[in-house]
Length: 289
Image (tube, rainbow, N blue to C red; front, side, top):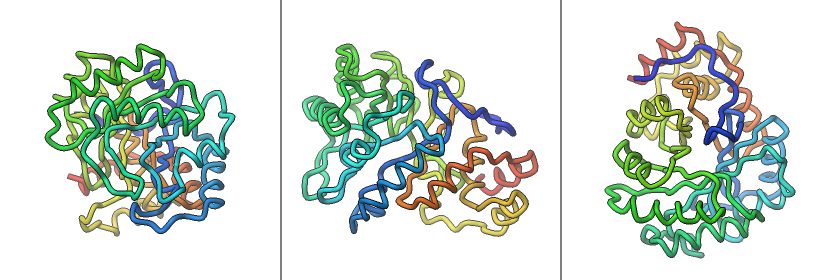
């Protein structure tokens, strides 16, 4: 089991070579706050991206299927940030199939995975992708075949590093028999943890663990008083406390909180500097048990 850290390091070498600030940014909410819309104001979303990079974020998580109508996360990223800063790491995902009307199809097979990678390359204006996750679905028994498809694209130079999203330790081990896994992306936060043993494996092996929905309670009632008390003592917000707790779980944790608000991206990024003391961590651990 991982031991919480009081002073987590500010950076991480993704894949052993790409230095990223541990607080990243998730682009899912750039086109729309909710998957069903309505669309965001493109100028506001552009301002969020610019501000994130100004604040030192150099790890942006995106996907070609993050779109609402004609507005897409990839399109915004390219329009606002291209030509990209040399240290910017763009992580993309493939796996689901999403139609132009926004509806979802069956999980992608090898042909759709290749198409998804090439679409991401076109939309982002890149000749290679720094990191590509294979996003899995429940009861997925096709990890080897589909991960092998991405491994072949890595051999061709189209992908630098490979990752898995929504994975278990068994799926991770199966993928590692095919090619190195540089990052794992699972749902993980103070009040919910998807396959928490995966974090232990990632910590031991030095694999980046990229939690999503770290600020969500997913319907679970939150004990607001302890969170508010800890936040007030540090001059922080409850959301910042949640992110700081998540980062303290392991030095391999790289949160990617997403937002469509400039104020929130500033708040989230500042959480990387929040240092929780042992009493705080013990209180929060008890809340999350």
